[in-house]
Length: 502
Image (cartoon, rainbow, N blue to C red; front, side, top):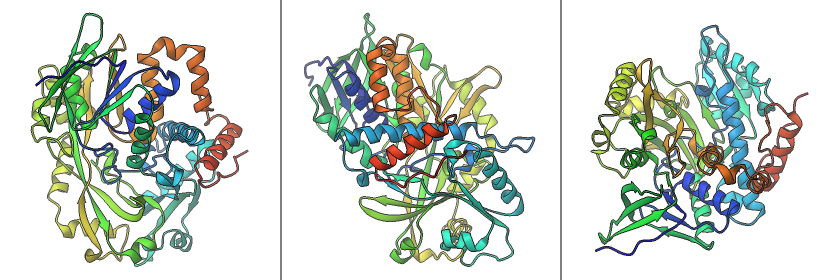
C-alpha cells in the first residue's frame, strides 16, 4: 500500500550524530527549512553513534598515537593530530552554543572531563613517545600536555596499568587533563529531541530507504518502506543527505551520481572486554591509548577506557578487531557482496591486494581465544583476571575504498564526503574520528551543497556566532585558543584549560 508523497526541503537518511548535527545547523541557519528524517531502526543513534558501538569517545588527538606517525627520517608528523584537535574544538564550541541557548540537555548528560593518556613500553616506543611529546608541545592546541618516564608518577596517574608490571621494563606516558568523555549516543538523541520540537521537522523510525532517483529539476525521489507494516511512500526533496553510517555506501550506489562511482567499502567489526567488577572500575579514571599492532586498522588501537554510559561508570578494553560482511551491526551478511559493482571492482581488488597484512591481522583477531584476549588486556593491566571481564560486541565500521590512478584503488581510514556536482545530494563514508569532528565535516558539506547561502553574510555571521573561532586558526593563535577553551569549558562544565604557552 502506498501513502501520499511529501515534499520537504531536506531529507536526512540515518538518525546518527552526522544527521543530527547537519539538521541542527540548518535549522539555526535557515529556520524556515522543512526537514524529514528517516531511520531504519526504532531509536536514534543505535548504530555507530551509540556509546557501546563507538570505538573511541571525544577524539581530540591528545592520546591517539595513530594520528602522529613517525616518518622515515625519524621525525613525527603532527599535521593530522592538529587538524583533528582543532576540529574537535569546533564541535565543543557548537555544543557550548546549544547549551547556552538552552536547546539541548545539560552537559553531564553527554560530556565530562577525563584525562587522555598515551602509554607505551619498550625502549623504541619510549623514544617515539618522547619525540611525539616534543613535537606536539610546539602547538598551542596541546598546551598542558605532561610527559614522564617516572614509574612512580605513572603509577599515581594510572595505578592499574603499573601494578604487577616488570620493574625493569622502560615505560613512558603523556597526559592531557582537558580530555573529555563524550557519549555521542546521548548527545545525538538530545539534538533530535530539539529538532522534533521545531516547526517543519518530521522524524520517522522503522522506515528504510529502498531507492533514490533524481528528476529533471535535480530534486530527489526517495522511496521509503515501513519495516513493520510494509507500507511504501515516496518523498520528493531538494536536498538529500545520506548519513547512514555503514549503510551509506549502498544508498550512494543507488543514487548513481557520477561522483559516487568507484567507491567501495571494507567492513571491520569489533568487540570489547567490559569490566564487571565495581572495585576495578572505580580505580581507573582515564582514557589510556597504546600503540596499535602492525597491520591493525586505526579504530583498533587498544585502549583502557573509562566512560559514562547510561549514567553509570564503565571500564572497557579493546576494541578487538574482526571481520564481517555486514555494513551495519543490524545489517545483512549480503551487504558487502551486494555492494560490489562493475565500477568499483578494480579499486576493491587493488586495495585488497595492497592490504593483505590487514586481512591476515583481521583473521588472527577473529580466531583469538579468550586466553589471547586476556593476554592483550594484561599488556595494559598486568593483574587482570578473566572472571572480572565479559565480551561484548561493538559496532561495525566500513572503511572507504576509492579509485587511485597509481594503485588502481586504495583503502583509506577516515571520513569522506561525496557530493553531486549540483549539490543536491551528499553522502558521508568512512569512520573514525567522524563523530568528534562532525561539526567541521558538516560545515564542509554545507560549503559544497549550499554554496550561495553558505557564502552569504547572513550565514557567515550566524556560523561565527555558533562557532566563535570560525575562519581562524587556534593552532596559530595562543590567545584565541586559550579564550575559546575557557569559554567552552565553562559552558560545558569541563576542566579549565592550561595557561597558553608563550
